Length: 253
Length: 210
Image (cartoon, rainbow over all chains, first blue to last red; front, top):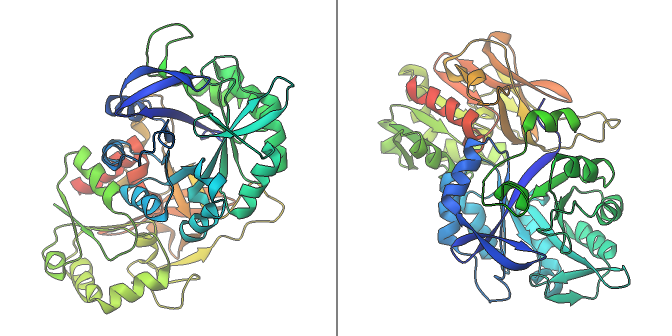
């Protein structure tokens, strides 16, 4: 059996480097992206996601050169997100050999952008990224621009709107859990998963295989993204590119 | 040298990247002259059946392909839509296919009761060998974890061979379909080897060694 639940290393790019944030802050240097992706090929990882952080905030364009180097080394389905704001850029990224584009901040200016991409490239190639944070009263809010800008949409309402406009899947990141090794936000994942019919990829907080199992079984996530867990040995320890034990995952999922 | 035929259907960069990775020379071309000189041909393809056949017929590729493949018996590998074009016809279109392998291309009709399965069939899935083939040689041994061979698929139509001797791989997605086919020097893969890391590399390496 293949892994029925997609398990996707989600890697953060900052300038030329691979980094890892904690709650979207303090990006720590992980390494050279090319070496890292070579290791993921070796580890027989079935899908990779690259998110360029701060790209919209810094008003950058997707770095086509880096993406093209990644596409030359990665022989698995790939997605990319970060500062995609126009049709041509998305088209260029697909042409490099990426299967999916991930869109976030620009959608709050122009939600119809999803529709345009979806109609042209197919819903399966368009991913909406939703960054969510709890406020002091325990209410969830949607954020854009690397977690710096609060948007006036309720998470469920935004997810449903994106589905309706043609999103093929949603990558749902808990800003509070990002890089904390505290486990996924199961409550958040469940609320969103139950409100849409498209796959929801849970992101933020995974520390071990049982966190993955929990967010799939209790949070109804159809796929999971892994950050710190695949770039560090353990919480507080050094960099080690790795992937959880597949036979264990197969047994539990 | 492998000639990757660029007839305007889909991205070919990933395929040539993988050949580069495994140290096999390849060239992406839409030139009739280059096709005429080909030692080995790769026919890729993503998109609609009729559109692809129309281009192949109208741009003069058909005549050369027929000669190379049927008379000179040059090895050819069709990937995804490229493989479907080898069949006699497709439910996706009205034009006849290349007819290199007696087979039909059929739309997935999945039972309503199984809502987990969606069309397109997209994602990784396993294959089972049905007949030995040079194309699939050793694919069970590539995983360092002992995983059975798996490949990345994206398609809404599948191939069914008329004669089981032409099936080399089968995959189950609601129904069992032919995910790999062969007729002598003509090979087809429904999946994308260029997106199937070690398993795909093995298949392309095998094709390069035929």
